[in-house]
Amino acid sequence: MVAEFEKSMVVGENGERAVKEILCHTYDFFAVPPDVDINGIDAKMVHRASGTGFTVQIKTDAKSVETGNIFVELVSVAGEGGGNLPSWGWKCAADVLLIHVPHASPGQAIAYFVDHVRLRAVIPFWLTKFGVKRVRNRDYGLRGYDTLGIAVPLAMFCCACVIGEVAGPSQ
Image (cartoon, rainbow, N blue to C red):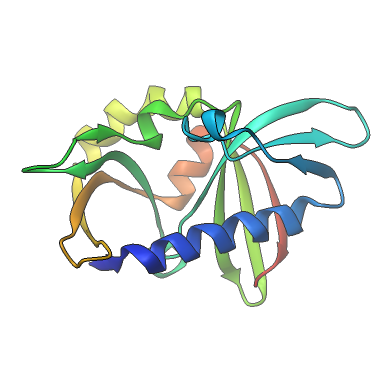
């Protein structure tokens, strides 16, 4: 399974816009400074009615409808010459992780609110149950890098760590 890096970036950026569109009637979104964004925090959300604010990291899993799984990324840039960098599955620093699933049903997308503490707690179990999958990503120069993660059935993922979901139009 090869995903071109540029295409992955566009999917991610479109996912962020889609999540903001799905949630715009309930939440205001605010940009975060670049030094905060480096830690994987994409935005600050504030609930309009209550004024409660929290930081979010937004990930898009465009393949989940096709595979029936959520890919929980554990290591980015894995392998020889790579940095073997812990990825969002292990190191989400935001208050809430949002997983965007485009085209969850015809014309509909879903944004899952994920408790990343619960997510990290079940990763060891999922590692033994499903094992690690290596996904090849091609970068701009076609050199490529691998990411490592776990393909978790969507229903199991939702039961283990999803604390809410909102549906809205697919883009």
